[in-house]
Image: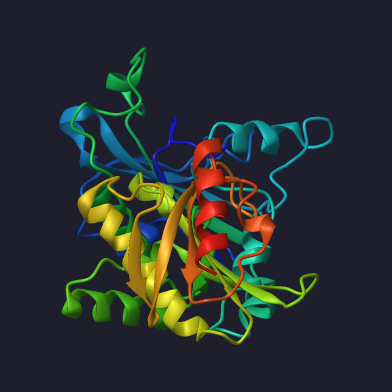
Length: 335
């Protein structure tokens, strides 16, 4: 299951060809670089040309910016045939919530960038940006992976600023957030940052994707939407289920974004059976032990109180058995 361990945040820049380390360093002139390493180690995932940037040095908080001279390993290796990549993935070296196939799914759900798949296919190297509290001398033998006053939002904002600087490299194709399974071109990345800053919003589209699926094996057909990536902010992802054509997916997506931001700002205050308005209707929340679509993670599932019969499959994975029965009972009385 995705979790924060050696690394607590991670993003990647996909590039056509390898840039010199000096070009990366120049882009990061406004950041406190404390270490520079030109060497290339034997393993492609440790010891490559890199920079170390101080984030919270008082608690050993640093961001590693490392140049990896190969394509993004989207299948995350195999214990028998690609053990180095598999071990690196297990240690969170591609991001704490990276999951096999994440880059492919990000391109499939890049709704505002139809050419994402063909552009991403051109990349030959990548830069990984990883935040950690166990790097450097102070981190050796440290039993704590995070400081006692750990806060994910400032940390993710800092990593995002680094990504914003590097996505402007001449051969950069896009920024890829493996934890949120989303890709953005440089122009889209900066436009999103600018818009969210002016509106005083978190740049959730850079951190978390919203995906749309149609469950065509059901009659009547239902749509299913979810977020992926909110674990970066120590918050749950969200799912919304609704009958096909009954509600505007764009409005439902806005509802999921609002619900995500609400939990980040207010903490885990949404409980089973709570309701929230959005997309013109009322939704009822239930905790789910594993979402309907990979990557595997716990979510909050929102079911619509719009007079339509909710299919059985949406009750099956509600985490608490009593709440699962309560959900079935409620929606049978109030279809």
